Image 1 (tube, rainbow, N blue to C red):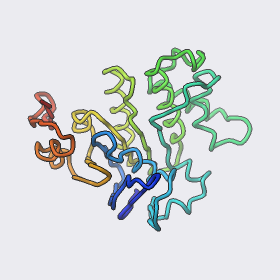
Image 2 (spheres, rainbow, N blue to C red):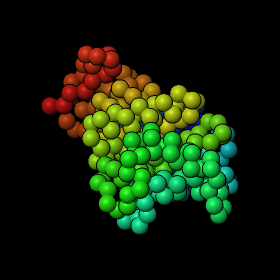
Image 3 (tube, rainbow, N blue to C red):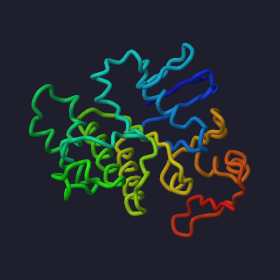
Length: 258
Protein backbone atom coordinates (compact mmCIF):
# COMPACT_ATOMS: atom_id res chain seq x y z
CA UNK A 1 0.00 0.00 0.00
CA UNK A 2 2.66 2.52 1.04
CA UNK A 3 6.44 2.39 1.38
CA UNK A 4 9.42 4.64 1.88
CA UNK A 5 13.18 4.13 2.10
CA UNK A 6 15.69 6.02 4.23
CA UNK A 7 13.23 8.79 5.14
CA UNK A 8 14.97 11.72 6.81
CA UNK A 9 13.58 15.04 7.95
CA UNK A 10 14.90 18.15 9.68
CA UNK A 11 13.06 21.07 11.25
CA UNK A 12 14.95 24.25 12.14
CA UNK A 13 18.22 22.32 11.72
CA UNK A 14 17.08 19.70 14.23
CA UNK A 15 17.09 16.13 12.93
CA UNK A 16 13.62 14.64 13.44
CA UNK A 17 13.72 11.49 11.28
CA UNK A 18 16.89 9.56 10.49
CA UNK A 19 16.83 6.99 7.71
CA UNK A 20 13.44 5.40 8.40
CA UNK A 21 12.38 2.46 6.24
CA UNK A 22 8.70 1.53 6.12
CA UNK A 23 6.59 -0.84 4.02
CA UNK A 24 2.94 -1.32 4.96
CA UNK A 25 0.85 -3.89 3.12
CA UNK A 26 -2.80 -3.99 2.11
CA UNK A 27 -5.11 -4.85 4.98
CA UNK A 28 -2.55 -4.05 7.69
CA UNK A 29 -3.09 -2.18 10.92
CA UNK A 30 0.28 -0.62 11.79
CA UNK A 31 0.74 1.09 15.15
CA UNK A 32 3.59 3.59 15.48
CA UNK A 33 4.70 3.88 19.10
CA UNK A 34 7.54 5.46 21.05
CA UNK A 35 8.28 8.11 23.68
CA UNK A 36 7.57 11.81 23.26
CA UNK A 37 9.79 13.36 20.60
CA UNK A 38 10.56 10.04 18.89
CA UNK A 39 9.30 11.34 15.52
CA UNK A 40 6.00 9.45 15.34
CA UNK A 41 3.78 12.30 14.17
CA UNK A 42 6.48 13.63 11.83
CA UNK A 43 6.73 10.23 10.14
CA UNK A 44 2.95 10.11 9.77
CA UNK A 45 2.94 13.59 8.21
CA UNK A 46 5.70 12.66 5.75
CA UNK A 47 3.86 9.49 4.70
CA UNK A 48 0.63 11.48 4.28
CA UNK A 49 2.40 13.93 1.94
CA UNK A 50 1.83 16.83 4.34
CA UNK A 51 5.47 17.74 4.90
CA UNK A 52 8.44 17.34 2.59
CA UNK A 53 11.64 15.54 3.49
CA UNK A 54 15.08 17.11 3.29
CA UNK A 55 16.38 15.15 0.34
CA UNK A 56 15.07 13.37 -2.74
CA UNK A 57 13.18 10.58 -1.03
CA UNK A 58 10.11 9.15 -2.67
CA UNK A 59 7.11 7.79 -0.79
CA UNK A 60 5.24 5.26 -2.91
CA UNK A 61 1.48 4.92 -2.48
CA UNK A 62 -0.07 2.13 -4.54
CA UNK A 63 3.16 1.86 -6.54
CA UNK A 64 3.03 5.54 -7.53
CA UNK A 65 5.08 8.37 -5.99
CA UNK A 66 2.59 10.06 -3.67
CA UNK A 67 3.67 13.59 -4.60
CA UNK A 68 2.68 12.85 -8.21
CA UNK A 69 -0.91 12.03 -7.33
CA UNK A 70 -3.61 14.52 -8.26
CA UNK A 71 -4.59 15.96 -4.86
CA UNK A 72 -8.32 15.73 -5.49
CA UNK A 73 -8.02 12.11 -6.53
CA UNK A 74 -5.65 11.33 -3.66
CA UNK A 75 -8.20 12.62 -1.14
CA UNK A 76 -10.55 9.85 -2.25
CA UNK A 77 -7.94 7.18 -1.54
CA UNK A 78 -6.45 8.36 1.74
CA UNK A 79 -7.55 10.41 4.74
CA UNK A 80 -5.80 11.68 7.86
CA UNK A 81 -7.03 12.23 11.38
CA UNK A 82 -4.78 14.88 12.92
CA UNK A 83 -3.66 15.11 16.53
CA UNK A 84 -4.60 18.80 16.64
CA UNK A 85 -8.00 19.57 15.13
CA UNK A 86 -9.62 23.00 15.10
CA UNK A 87 -11.44 23.59 18.36
CA UNK A 88 -13.57 26.48 17.07
CA UNK A 89 -15.74 25.45 14.12
CA UNK A 90 -19.03 27.38 13.86
CA UNK A 91 -20.98 24.47 12.37
CA UNK A 92 -23.41 21.79 13.45
CA UNK A 93 -21.88 18.38 14.12
CA UNK A 94 -23.47 16.82 11.04
CA UNK A 95 -21.98 19.57 8.87
CA UNK A 96 -18.48 18.96 10.25
CA UNK A 97 -18.82 15.27 9.36
CA UNK A 98 -20.07 16.28 5.91
CA UNK A 99 -16.73 18.03 5.33
CA UNK A 100 -15.35 14.54 4.74
CA UNK A 101 -17.49 14.32 1.61
CA UNK A 102 -16.12 17.52 0.02
CA UNK A 103 -13.94 15.59 -2.49
CA UNK A 104 -17.10 14.05 -3.95
CA UNK A 105 -19.22 17.09 -4.80
CA UNK A 106 -18.64 20.63 -6.08
CA UNK A 107 -21.65 22.64 -4.91
CA UNK A 108 -24.38 20.53 -3.32
CA UNK A 109 -24.04 17.12 -1.64
CA UNK A 110 -26.00 14.24 -3.11
CA UNK A 111 -28.29 11.84 -1.27
CA UNK A 112 -25.42 9.34 -1.14
CA UNK A 113 -23.27 11.84 0.77
CA UNK A 114 -25.91 12.27 3.46
CA UNK A 115 -26.30 8.48 3.72
CA UNK A 116 -22.56 8.06 4.20
CA UNK A 117 -22.48 10.82 6.84
CA UNK A 118 -25.31 9.18 8.77
CA UNK A 119 -23.53 5.84 8.68
CA UNK A 120 -20.27 7.39 9.90
CA UNK A 121 -22.07 9.10 12.79
CA UNK A 122 -23.68 5.80 13.77
CA UNK A 123 -20.31 4.06 13.80
CA UNK A 124 -18.81 6.69 16.10
CA UNK A 125 -21.87 7.01 18.37
CA UNK A 126 -22.57 10.69 17.67
CA UNK A 127 -25.98 10.54 15.96
CA UNK A 128 -27.74 11.80 19.08
CA UNK A 129 -25.91 15.14 18.97
CA UNK A 130 -25.69 15.68 15.22
CA UNK A 131 -27.83 18.83 15.48
CA UNK A 132 -25.68 20.35 18.21
CA UNK A 133 -23.15 23.12 17.71
CA UNK A 134 -19.70 21.55 17.37
CA UNK A 135 -18.26 24.16 19.73
CA UNK A 136 -20.54 22.97 22.54
CA UNK A 137 -18.98 19.51 22.64
CA UNK A 138 -16.42 18.08 25.03
CA UNK A 139 -12.92 17.20 23.85
CA UNK A 140 -13.75 13.51 23.54
CA UNK A 141 -16.94 14.20 21.63
CA UNK A 142 -15.03 16.41 19.19
CA UNK A 143 -12.55 13.56 18.67
CA UNK A 144 -15.39 11.27 17.66
CA UNK A 145 -16.79 13.89 15.27
CA UNK A 146 -13.47 14.11 13.44
CA UNK A 147 -13.18 10.32 13.37
CA UNK A 148 -16.62 10.24 11.72
CA UNK A 149 -15.43 12.87 9.24
CA UNK A 150 -12.44 10.82 8.04
CA UNK A 151 -14.51 7.63 7.90
CA UNK A 152 -17.05 9.47 5.74
CA UNK A 153 -14.24 10.62 3.47
CA UNK A 154 -13.21 7.05 2.65
CA UNK A 155 -16.66 5.49 2.43
CA UNK A 156 -16.97 4.96 -1.31
CA UNK A 157 -16.51 2.31 -3.99
CA UNK A 158 -12.75 2.83 -4.27
CA UNK A 159 -10.85 -0.22 -3.05
CA UNK A 160 -7.67 -0.32 -0.99
CA UNK A 161 -8.03 2.88 1.04
CA UNK A 162 -5.46 4.26 3.49
CA UNK A 163 -6.27 5.89 6.82
CA UNK A 164 -3.73 7.83 8.91
CA UNK A 165 -4.60 8.55 12.53
CA UNK A 166 -2.44 10.61 14.87
CA UNK A 167 -3.31 9.81 18.50
CA UNK A 168 -7.04 9.24 17.85
CA UNK A 169 -7.66 8.11 21.45
CA UNK A 170 -6.93 11.48 23.06
CA UNK A 171 -9.72 12.57 25.44
CA UNK A 172 -11.70 9.37 24.89
CA UNK A 173 -13.04 7.26 27.74
CA UNK A 174 -12.18 3.55 27.92
CA UNK A 175 -15.33 2.46 26.10
CA UNK A 176 -14.75 4.75 23.14
CA UNK A 177 -11.02 3.97 23.01
CA UNK A 178 -11.88 0.34 22.39
CA UNK A 179 -14.74 1.14 20.02
CA UNK A 180 -12.44 3.40 17.98
CA UNK A 181 -9.78 0.71 17.65
CA UNK A 182 -12.43 -1.87 16.79
CA UNK A 183 -13.66 0.46 14.02
CA UNK A 184 -10.12 0.82 12.68
CA UNK A 185 -9.59 -2.95 12.83
CA UNK A 186 -12.85 -3.54 10.95
CA UNK A 187 -11.76 -0.98 8.35
CA UNK A 188 -8.57 -2.98 7.65
CA UNK A 189 -10.51 -6.25 7.34
CA UNK A 190 -11.79 -4.97 3.97
CA UNK A 191 -8.22 -4.91 2.59
CA UNK A 192 -7.77 -1.28 3.59
CA UNK A 193 -4.74 -0.06 5.57
CA UNK A 194 -4.49 1.96 8.76
CA UNK A 195 -1.35 3.62 10.18
CA UNK A 196 -2.00 4.83 13.71
CA UNK A 197 0.14 6.71 16.24
CA UNK A 198 -0.66 5.34 19.70
CA UNK A 199 0.67 5.91 23.21
CA UNK A 200 -1.00 2.95 24.93
CA UNK A 201 1.28 -0.01 24.24
CA UNK A 202 -1.19 -2.56 25.53
CA UNK A 203 -3.91 -1.36 23.18
CA UNK A 204 -1.39 -1.36 20.34
CA UNK A 205 -0.46 -4.95 21.18
CA UNK A 206 -4.12 -6.01 21.29
CA UNK A 207 -5.27 -4.43 18.02
CA UNK A 208 -2.33 -3.83 15.65
CA UNK A 209 -0.99 -6.38 13.17
CA UNK A 210 2.45 -4.76 13.12
CA UNK A 211 4.30 -2.39 15.46
CA UNK A 212 6.89 0.25 14.56
CA UNK A 213 8.78 1.29 17.69
CA UNK A 214 10.66 4.57 17.33
CA UNK A 215 13.44 6.11 19.37
CA UNK A 216 15.04 9.51 18.66
CA UNK A 217 13.86 9.61 15.05
CA UNK A 218 14.98 6.09 14.20
CA UNK A 219 13.31 2.70 13.99
CA UNK A 220 14.24 0.68 17.04
CA UNK A 221 12.08 -2.32 16.09
CA UNK A 222 9.53 -3.21 13.41
CA UNK A 223 7.44 -6.37 13.29
CA UNK A 224 4.76 -8.38 15.06
CA UNK A 225 3.72 -7.18 18.54
CA UNK A 226 5.38 -10.13 20.24
CA UNK A 227 8.60 -9.45 18.33
CA UNK A 228 8.73 -5.73 19.07
CA UNK A 229 7.37 -5.63 22.60
CA UNK A 230 10.21 -7.16 24.57
CA UNK A 231 11.47 -5.98 27.93
CA UNK A 232 14.83 -4.90 26.50
CA UNK A 233 13.42 -2.91 23.58
CA UNK A 234 10.69 -1.15 25.54
CA UNK A 235 12.97 -0.33 28.46
CA UNK A 236 15.56 1.07 26.06
CA UNK A 237 13.05 3.22 24.14
CA UNK A 238 11.27 4.64 27.17
CA UNK A 239 14.12 4.60 29.70
CA UNK A 240 11.83 2.87 32.17
CA UNK A 241 11.71 -0.74 33.39
CA UNK A 242 8.89 -3.03 32.30
CA UNK A 243 7.86 -6.68 32.31
CA UNK A 244 6.01 -8.69 29.67
CA UNK A 245 3.20 -11.18 30.23
CA UNK A 246 0.20 -12.60 28.36
CA UNK A 247 -3.21 -10.98 28.58
CA UNK A 248 -5.42 -13.37 30.61
CA UNK A 249 -8.34 -13.08 28.16
CA UNK A 250 -7.04 -12.74 24.60
CA UNK A 251 -3.45 -13.98 25.05
CA UNK A 252 -2.02 -10.80 23.47
CA UNK A 253 1.23 -9.30 24.72
CA UNK A 254 0.73 -7.26 27.90
CA UNK A 255 3.25 -4.68 29.13
CA UNK A 256 3.53 -3.74 32.79
CA UNK A 257 5.67 -0.72 33.74
CA UNK A 258 7.47 -0.21 37.00
